[in-house]
Image (cartoon, rainbow, N blue to C red; front, side, top):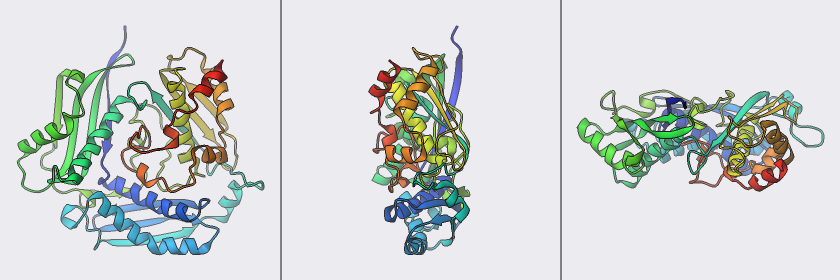
Amino acid sequence: MERRYLFTSESVSEGHPDKLADQISDAILDAFLAREASAKVACETLVADNLIVIAGEFRTADPAIYDDIRARAEEIARQVLRDAGYREADTGIDPDRCEVQVRFNHQSIQINKGIVHADGQLGAGDQGLMFGYACDETPDLMPYPIWLAHRLVMRQAQLRKSGALPWLRPDAKSQVTVHYEGQRVAGVDNVVISTQIERNLDPAWVAREVTREIIDPLLPANLRAADFRIWVNPAGPFEIGGPNGDTGLTGRKIIVDTYGGACPHGGGAFSGKDPSKVDRSAAYMARYIAKNIVAAGLARRCLVQIAYAIGVAEPVSVMIDSQGTAGVADAALEAAVKKVFRLTPSGIIETLDLARPIYRQTAAYGHFGRSDIDLKWERTDRAASLKAAVG
């Protein structure tokens, strides 16, 4: 008998404090890569009430680039706040009057020498293990709970920015609980939306509007369980939000960034890291591999793990787990992956074209399953090669 169970994932909006921190860190990264493709960046951001702190370690071949972006970092941060929808302190933070502290440092020479080989090839920027995942639950080959959770907060932002629901504010969270029968989505058990709103609105009216304008267009009636429930701002009016309501840090939403808990996570965050850091680039490659395996029809679900030692180019391990859904042995899939994909840091960067300023757009609404933007790790252009390699 197939197991029946519930599984829950959450997402947060671009105005959530943690996501503001991620976007600022990635906007700094993009600024460096726009000037120097080989720049080394490890940027962290703290958002707290009316304060932004940007810190990190950086290395550029041209020292003038480092100096220029350090001087521009304050305005980059303020623009991220404006783009997210913050206008004054009452909305959560004032982008024009908040304090911004910039604490840049140079990357350790020892680290740089340890990862750049004499032939110009890169060793892994750190040790670590990375996971990628894909499944056939959605058109984007993502688990349904996180896929829907992202779309709920994306719609909240679209309606807020368009003026259709002008009383919405930038900070919001969603949560989706899905009922599974075995590996099949049987229905949605409940949805939670917590959204910042302007002051003195009737909670019952807010709940009706959020249900009608955000949830109903995205969740078909036939996917709602018999006892389906909706919670809108279940703790009461959500009027104090953004950094005024909570502190934000880069890298604190790693499960939101990936698969909503549907597979393991190696522990490394993405935002603020240039692609020589395998925490980021190898996680993108693992998703690329998993998605192409599922797109090729070789498995309905696929988990990929890749692990590295700092300074070493080739991974120390590659593992495929098709979770019992493949028509061939997982060992055969592993062998095919090693034939089809280049798994060194240099190979990953070249294959996925990662040495360019593409990262801020990934820093909200997930790094995977993003059909709204063109990301090379979301393509399925290696599916045919994988099928041929399996034989």
